[in-house]
Image 1 (spheres, rainbow, N blue to C red):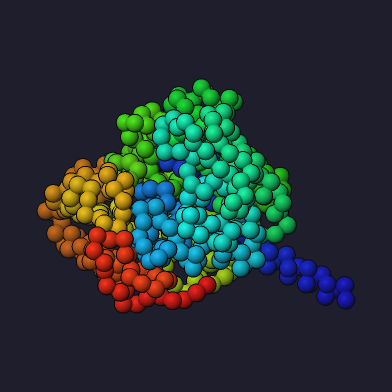
Image 2 (cartoon, helix red, strand yellow):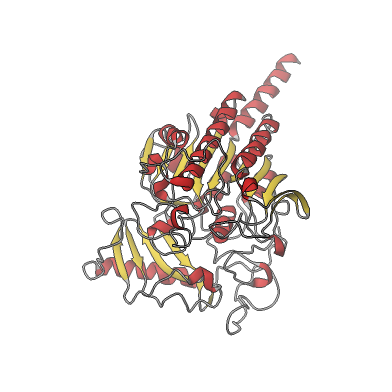
Length: 476
């Protein structure tokens, strides 16, 4: 009997070890060039630099160009144009339908304890809240911490445990200065209380999104002003997270992903409160690499390739299928855009399964990367995107001709190779046409877009569009 119990205990331990703890740490508006390991000279990030040296540094890692769509893509494994939204609409900040399957739901059903700490920004007003989407523990703000350089009079940022249950409010600069430390405290407690079970924690920091907040310990300490101070405090907080994992004996069985939701603000109204996209062109909301390519670091001792750098293409939309594979659970039945990166992350010299990445600004496909080449399409200034409000398109400048760039040799996208590489232009144009038929564009939805409600699809256009030919009625 004793032998049988020992075998059962050993089997349970093996099964638990087979499911790694999973931690996503998401910065907000952090630029590619804002970490020491990604080239910053005036901001000290020793903990994230150590994470990069102990894990896999991804130099072609992509998010979306703005907060809401980026978080929706990360949570669902889909490009925002594919995601089903409330009343079949299509919005500038994605409002996912509650029937969309989120990472937390998949991992919860696989036996994980799931938690969110920080910024949500996924349409609570439309019923899509963390609890409804699979998070068992929550401490979050419904949206961002602000939208201007300085706190506006009367602005209130609520922290909630669940919809309607406000437990704290951010009203003053003094309140804002506590954001990073407060979220870190909550994350550390979640990790401590989850130490005996596999857990998934989505730690979505508010910094360095404006208005910036920095505690007195870090204020005035960096060479990059308040923006650099905010990142140095963020880096120190992440050091505390790793210290807690090690203290609890969880470090070796915890997969940690660090990235940003989009590139940095470089707007004149933000001034020195914005980040650096270096070495890339562009910034948040633009089509250029600086708005989309973000720091990507993955660490899992003894499993993920350690101390390596890869330029293989990967994206936040690849996290859901990767986590599903690592947790031993099934993917949702709906069509996804993400790839399982498990072999790419864990096998020496393994190529990424992703060869193509799409850049949508609003509902327009503005660019497409395939392998080393990026095709940027001719477009009007800002407009002709009836499915997205103007603030999403306001940073899209007029481009009279389609342009082709080779990113490995031209990261600033300054030398147009379209005339010299017609075969490449033709191939990428064909891939773009296929994507438009599948996902849709500003003229209407594609055949692969998700819809859950009765009525017209993308009805918030200038003119009504016909019924979608393949409406998906699958429930959770």
